[in-house]
Figure 1 (tube, rainbow, N blue to C red):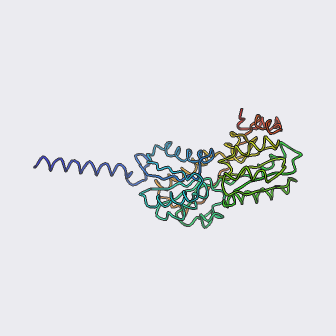
Figure 2 (cartoon, helix red, strand yellow):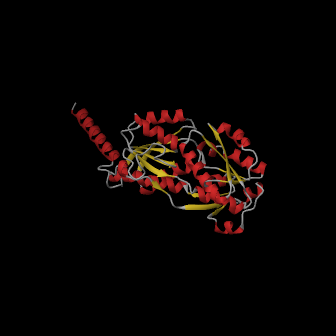
Figure 3 (cartoon, helix red, strand yellow):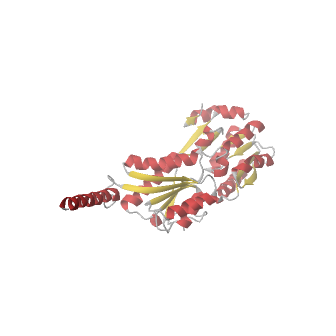
Length: 325
């Protein structure tokens, strides 16, 4: 009997020590911390994949142990909503939402845990924060607002005689509309006309591109439905001999000719640093301004450009941070 009591006591002590180790103590030291984090990613494509990877890298670099619960909505809003609702009922320390629809679902369903977003163009316009400077609730994160004017200017830099630029975007993504509005404004000063078409899902992309008719170039915004099927845009650009300008490096790697955009891995890392401040330093999302990235990269793909009937000027190749061979 006495032996059994001693064994029971030892088990109890071991359990207490294990709980203490997992709790990370007071959460301020960093070393030895352990957390459980959910990631809701809207769809799989290079930019969003890179953002998620960068977010996780921040924890690896800090030596912080994390139990990850990674979910992908496969581009379906209903799935994003279901993931968010499940996360709300789990014992998570923090949730990362990757892309606007995933962030909107998380913000609506999750009120008791910190929620960070990344790859969101305009958080206020999307209804995620009260303002970008003072989010006001449990949600904040990083914006991937593109330098749309600089990207559209690449059309004239590569193809000076271009007069029309086609853009396909999702009617249900508010951030895509923001980018199209910026493109229209930029087009006025560049002497080009924007032709646009909308889709509800990636399966409609080919038909939407055809509906644009003859254009001199296409511009791909950071629209999740379009980017997840960017090969369709590449095929159209090659078939119609129209320059394809992307909005991030992954699109150029997939066959766009050129972009000047942000590095999504670094954006994810930046979001991870925000998460560490929340989890380790006790920062409140409500008081953490939405952050942006000013680290732009010029990425060119001469082979893709040639297939689209154009040649990238040598000065742009010389300036490029990355030349896709």
